[in-house]
Amino acid sequence: MKILKNKTAIITGATRGIGRGIAETFAKQGANVLFTYSSSSDLAKQIEKELSAEGVIVRGYKSDASSFEDCQKLVENITQEFEVIDILINNAGITKDNLSLRMTEKEWNEVIQINLTSTFLLCKFSLKKMIKNKQGKIINITSVVGHTGNIGQANYAASKSGIIGFSKSLAIEYGKKNIKINCISPGFIKSEMTEKINDNFKEMMKQ
Image 1 (cartoon, rainbow, N blue to C red):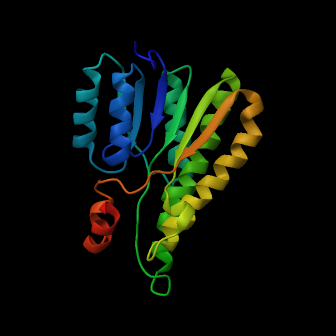
Image 2 (cartoon, one colour; image 1 turned 135 degrees about the vertical axis):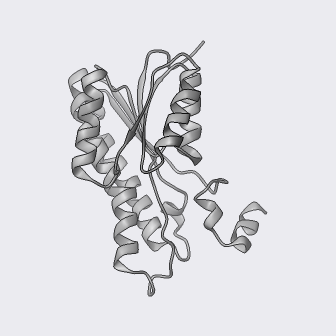
């Protein structure tokens, strides 16, 4: 039995890593997968083709997760075709690691914008549709680093910790409207993002 049959899910940052894994699993479980990507149109088309083989609708949307206009346009475009947004997965995220004293304003702002602000924006625009339909589920992907902090990742830790507090607040605001909001804090997972981490640190985490 496909537990997500006929459900429609928006998944941000779904061309690689955790997002790709979520998209593949959702498609196999019968959900229509509407995913965002930032650069590679060829890769997005490849994912559309692969996941469509599961007999579901798959659409890739090029979108800047940190842009108010792009996020608003994304949800508008989706809701013109799909009546209901059942699930929103906010997964898009980046790292720009540096020690705090060396961290530039750009490194700080980019991580906060793409990780935290994008989560706020997609929730803001999707919630309107979910409230109208009197149901919905939002899952925000944060990180264990949001709980513990990490050397050289003050910006990333701040963004992920912010998502945790944001998700708790949203759950209180909209739980009474039959909208369930949670966040998941994965540990270190082998992906394109974690490949950039120092080899000694990766070995320590493996142990």
